[in-house]
Amino acid sequence: MYSDPEYGTFYLTEVISQTNSDELKALAANCDQDAECSGKFSIVTVRDGLDALLIAGSEATSIVVLSGDVRIDIVGPAATFSPDEAVTLANAL
Image (tube, rainbow, N blue to C red; front, side, top):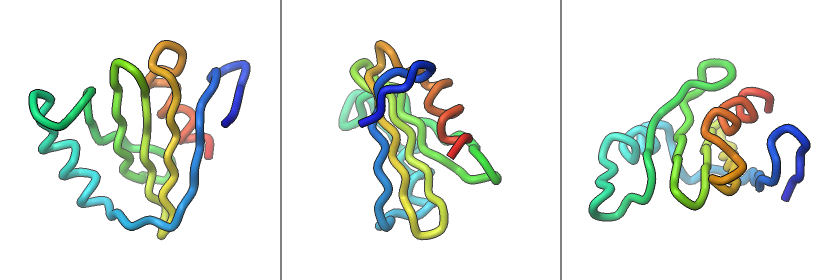
């Protein structure tokens, strides 16, 4: 967990990815908010032209970035961590 004066509180994890870019794109394209999705799912471009899955929910904001075989997840409370801040932070990694 990180507490940053600019971005507030957020969690950042890095793991070996079990996901690929096409799967992230499918999640965004096939998100049915009436069924299984909670929040707005979209694909955004971050540093070095990488596709990332941005999820803006009522409780949390998160972004998933795939860089090579590494998956980076950044999650923070929606009340203090906006989608724009998530993208800006992902670009800074």
